Amino acid sequence: MPGHIRQRGKGTWELKFDLGRDPLTGKRQVRYVSLKGTKREAQAELTRRLAEAQSGTYVDPSKLSVAEFLDRWAQDWVSMNVSPKTGERYGQLLDNQVKPHVGALPIQKLRPVHLSELYAKLLREGGVDGGPLSARSVGHAHRCLRRALGHATQWGIITTNPAAVVSPPKVQDKEIQIIREDEIRNVLGKLKGHLHSIATLALATGMRRGELLALRWIDVDLDAGAIHVERSLEQTRAGLRFKSPKTKHGRRSITLPPPAVRELRALRKAQQEQRLALGLGKAPDDALVFPTADGEPRKPNALTNEWIIATTATGRRISLHALRHTHASSLIAAGIDILTIGRRLGHAKAAVTLNVYGHLYASTDDRAAQVIEALFQ
Image 1 (spheres, rainbow, N blue to C red):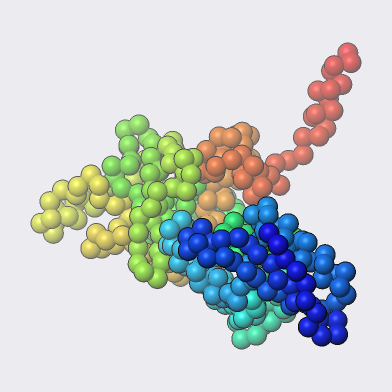
Image 2: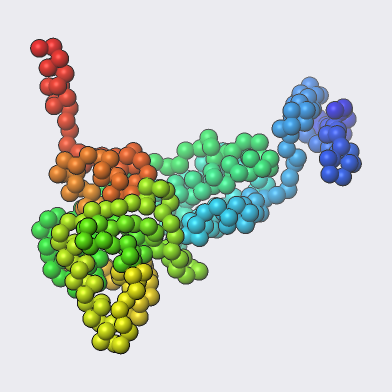
């Protein structure tokens, strides 16, 4: 692959080199590159580019901007490989936090320093109305950008991923919300109808909001006292959709305590009586456990709003997700092993469960020392 150097001015050089023939068109591929420096530096640059061309790692100079690439990535990869909800979240992060700040840069000129400056700026003024953006949100933007630029590297658009060598801002550990035993009685005592049933089942199983709203009566075995989690309900701007769990561990069976079985039996009976009173006949087995009044899926965001309004009357703002945390913390307090807890929660790995709830385990270092002491006796 021949090449040569031509001086264009004082300290300015033009590199010309041949990449061989285009495999599709058969035409010769000649490239020209201008740079400033000494002749020795120009010769070194020419040698480097020829070596890349020889090894197949050479990337053609491109005028593609960061924003243009991200649009292409969203169309060609995101739309085909992630759920609509995740794709929607990616779009929000890139449109609000990335494109306005570095979108105009040519993607091949994007450097780690640009991303460090971006994250610092977002922390200062990346929020609503120019206010600060949380470190957690900046971290989400970083991970999304790192994934996108990783594909740019795989596709040969850039040689290295600048986001891979930049660390997002550190996020302070956020204490998870757990409902106290006396608060549980207070909350359940003030809830009525479907909210009471949903809260009871969430406390009894640790199921996620979307899993509860996707639950069908065919998934419930009241005689065996068990629930089979097979899917989840997702809400996006495009509407509602049922989806399979992210991992094989998300599809699971959960044993129910007697109070939850009694709650579901009463709910099933009330629903059947209501349908008979309306002349609708017996509900099919695949009917939803927690539908709206007209039998349609209940929107997850609408349920959260209902929950906030209903629980505000208790005097303490309690999140719906706190029911899942309370379920896990109760099992930990009872001495249940981490693998069993992780399986009930649908975690893919025990490490996930430990990362969220590990701090709730009491220190057993003294007990460990006693066990080792016995080895010497």
